[in-house]
Image (cartoon, rainbow, N blue to C red; front, side, top):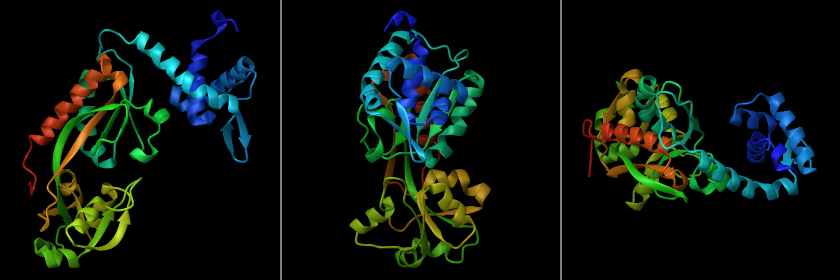
Amino acid sequence: MNLASLDLNLLVALDALLLESNVGRAAMRIGLSQPATSHALRRLRDIFRDPLLVRVGARMELTPRAQTLRAPLAQALDQVRGLLVPDEFDAARSERRFRLMMPDLAVELLMPRLMSRLDKAAPHVRIEIVPWRGPAVFTAEFARTIDLIVSIGDAFNGFHRQLLYTDSDALAVRKGHPVGARLKNPAAFLKARHVAVIGRGQNIDLIDHWLQTKGFERQIALVVPSYIEALHVTARSDLVAFVPGRLIDVLAKPLALSTVPPPLDPGIDEQFMFYPTRAQMDPGSIWLRSLMLQIGRELSDGPPRSRQR
């Protein structure tokens, strides 16, 4: 193969196709039209003399040859990107895209503040929030596409961790809840009907896991996959949500919610920011991390949460 005739953009397209195993999603990942991406796939098939993607029933699958290309291609492109990282990051002129993975809780708390800053300092920078994936399904290939993670714990290999902000859990009820004020009593709390939040990669609400360690069990009437859904249902029912207090603060007024200090207090929650080791010296990543840490400090310096340990 004559390397002088090889278009580097074809390798970028190949990387997206190998990650997505789907022409349409690969096109969205790299900002091309679907016909252009299909054309790139045809050229790649000619270059590698292999179909690369083949249809199996209703979906596309990688050929064995394509499977062997995934890791070395990813490594090669990362090295090329490293060569092109500028010495400085001009936020005002940059059109860079950052992909962030975080739960809905973090989106609600952090993104309005971040976007307000970007409107003024970096109007052409684009932020993409990708669906939350727990550590169990956080593959190395997926990790390569992520610029920042907001999460609890420390289970992301290849990423550095910094404390972003602290929080504490509280009870949320609709205004006028018939027993809301009595929920401070442990017996009333345990008797109430609760909504639990069990997200992707979990098999139990973290609150229930903590309660079990203390020998308590609350009455679960509904299970939802996100805190936002829990609060929306709570606002229109007599259910009780035991969720991070800062989220209740943000949504209390629009959803007409009241906050009740819990009779059983799990203490301080810590939310962390994770960034890839490969981006440690990347000026753009440093700039974004600085903004996120500023926002985290604003949250932590705000009004004290309801019940802190």
